[in-house]
Image (cartoon, rainbow, N blue to C red; front, side):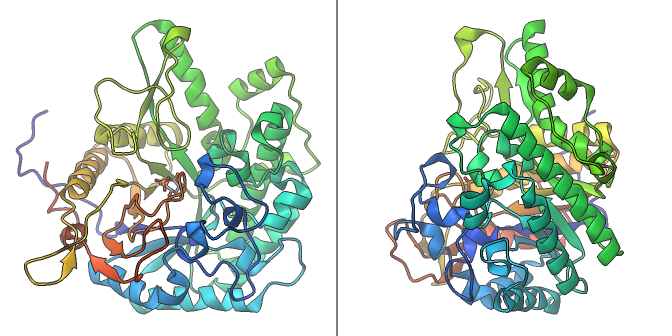
Length: 477
Ligand code: BG6
């Protein structure tokens, strides 16, 4: 099938174009408005680094990009690009500062009222993640996070509170960001305070069971409280290729993919799959279920959302187990692919592949809620005297990935929308750096704490505006 270079793609009329961030990477104001501490406030080096007892000044997330105070300016810029949707998260500890209180914090609720009102003023739909790597710290320290079954009740109370409060303002919800990343990062993803090296597989999978029940419960609550809303799961997707055609490598890939598909399978089918039961049997893991858990799990999601940054390889050959760099779950580098400055391999076709894989498996609408390039940007003065960044590398990356979204649409995949990650520069999750920028909007803040926090439109800002205005017709094959 050959296509001419001026081939255009038919994105659906109602395709939700937009951008994504998370509260803890953007808002700052970590101790304002009655907010309690979250796990992020004691992780100054991101998921890769160790945690501190108290928040320390070198933690860039404490101030973030100060979106808490500047959201009006930021939403206005998103509207200027033509966003139809803006993905952010609610910081759980703004609503329930410790996590186990009975009453929510009104000032925290008011902040998100203001933010969502500002979005709606411009016709931008908020897409809200209930939990994006920001478990209240108290729940981590006192309860060991999701290892403890009590977390289900705390999460249900939080979800019920925000569903009731924002039922007229938010129609798209996600339960847990990259829920499968708990396999690698139990503290950041699951608020589990027990160090990873001491955490047993039994406790890890019990924690996952609690999260899955809580996620299904949030789906049920959302459907009851906001009947016209849609709620999805969110999976870190990293398609995995066999390093060689050796059947041992192919089976290794299948097993590796199962460890991640497990999370989608549970959210879509509501039952433990056979391959997981086998894994539990062979590892001596027994999931403790209470009455009603199996039934609760049958509350399945309306759509599947996922992040996509890169693909990776696996092999069964013990001599080739090289650790690649990459989006949280790592893997073996692919010799055919280039990489970003942070070693994340760039594979636009992997996005078409993963869209097809998910759709073939689930036949549910898909939402790409993260994709983008983290790069070092140089702020310059443009010909019109305005400060800007000539980020052609980012435009190339995004164009090439969106072309593959167009291809997947032609394959017949049902895709609801696309929110580019870090639509405005935010603090990175894995390394807590501001130097690693993803945005269409440059934020003048640096890893040494300097900067004015002023916002500047990058070249990609104007490019994305054209993509949205043309509903994808301006993309170049
Ligand atoms: C995803 C996370 O893993 O990747 C985001 O959901 C994160 O929170 C994004 O920011 C990009 O990763 P990083 O480490 O470059 O910020």
